[in-house]
Length: 198
Image (cartoon, rainbow, N blue to C red; front, side, top):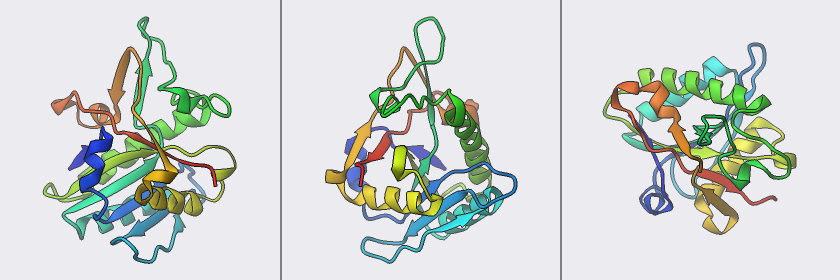
């Protein structure tokens, strides 16, 4: 079951859970998804790159072996629209150092990739497994190697002092989970984690 973490107050109960961070890619020919998994605080992390299909399978395998885990997915997990119904930025975090809205260029492709990824993942994990969902957002020189990005997201969850948290803003905000499971809409939007530049 995919559970959106929509506020900072919800994070306190998650820090000791297993955490999986994924820098999502959507290539049909190369290993464009970075994956880093930590079973518990202080455990070794060995990030790896996977092709899209293998990443979904690996994530499902890791979640199936735990009843309660955290997933940080580096891809837009919500959409924002203004009062006229046009796409808009979800907050200042999407404007620095240059506009990287959820609806523009790579953001739009990753939003689509996230829909397919989470839909497939939710069908592969047992119904009694809780997957607590957080959006990761990394830009600029920190967005290099996919496996390194995943490792950076994972370490940032443990260090509140090195992380910014954002709640998506707009006249109309739609959670990615509304597209994946419309029968139980509306869903809360996952909170956005942006690590400080290193």
